[in-house]
Amino acid sequence: MTPFVTHRGQVFPLDRSNVDTDAILPKQYLKSISRYGYGDWLFDDWRYLDPGDAETDTSTRRPNPDFSLNHAPYTGASILLARENFGCGSSREHAVWALRDFGFRVVIAPSFADIFYNNCFKNGLLPLTLPAEVVSGLFALATVEQTVELEVDLEAQLVISGDYQWPFEIDAARRHHLLEGLDDIAVTLASAGRIRSFESELREREPWLFGAAG
Image 1 (cartoon, rainbow, N blue to C red):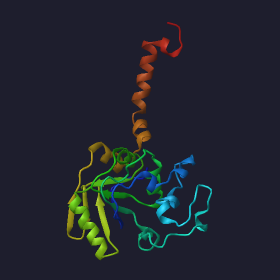
Image 2: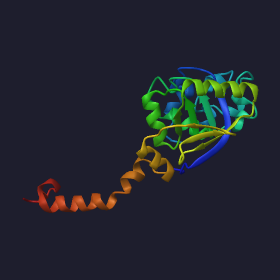
Image 3: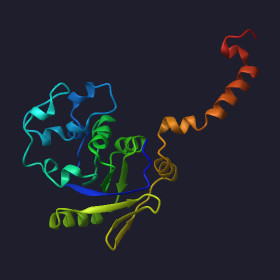
Image 4: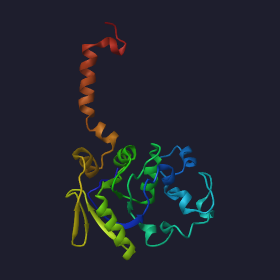
C-alpha cells in the first residue's frame, strides 16, 4: 500500500448526501475477482448515458455531459468532497477500490457510513470528517472557483487551503498505518517473528494440537 504523508490535489465537489455504494460502484461490477481496474466504472450510472457491465468496453459508451467528473479539471481530481453519510448502503469494498483506482486519495465529508469508513483505511484511501459548516464553505469555494486545490497533511492532521487550515482527528493506529503504507496483511507480517515463536512454544507445550502423539 502506498504510504500517505501529505497530498495536494484537485477537488471534485459532489454535492449530494447519502451517496450509497451502489451509486459509487453498481452491483454488476462485483463479479470481477480482481481488486483493481474499477476506476472506469466509478459513479457508472451518473457518468454514462447507456448501461454497461464488466464486459463492456467503456470507450464505446456515451459519457454524460451533465456529470462534471467527465470534464476537466475534474477528470484529474484526487480529493472528493461530499455531503453527509457518504458510502452508505451495502458493505462492498469494491466501492473503495473504484475511488482508489480512479485516482482519489482523500474523501472529505461531514460523516461516513461505518463499514465504508473502515474499508477506506484498508486500501490507502483517507476518509476525513470535517464539520458540516466547513464542508459547506468548501462547496461554496468550489462553486466560485472551479479549480480548487487542497493540501492534506496527515502528519500534522491539517487540511490546508492558502492561509486557511482545518484540523482533523484520525485514530492513532490508523494514522500510523497510512503513514507507513501498511495494510492488514503487512501489519500481521510485522509480527511474523512473534507468531512463529508462539507456534514453536505451543508445539512443544501441546504437541497433540499438531497431530503428534501425546
